[in-house]
Image 1 (cartoon, helix red, strand yellow):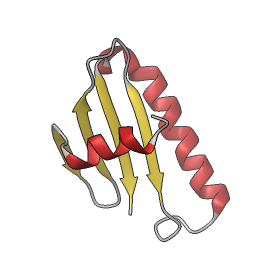
Image 2 (image 1 turned 60 degrees about the vertical axis):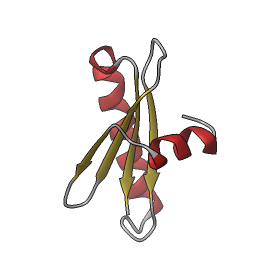
Image 3 (image 1 turned 180 degrees about the vertical axis):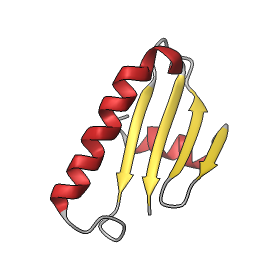
Image 4 (image 1 turned 180 degrees about the horizontal axis):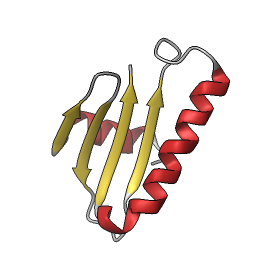
Length: 80
């Protein structure tokens, strides 16, 4: 997801919410033929930029490998 409007739509009315110890996953149907991913990784949760970027790369790669089973979803992963 690229625009703040897309993120706001997921934050305002998520279809699904999965809270975890260090992450929050929000999902919403998107009526598209492909899934979209948004990552929000704050400095408070992962201090070093090297670690934040590695975490984002790992999440994007996992999303890429599983995107066939996620068709039609907007997913936002938040690390507060």
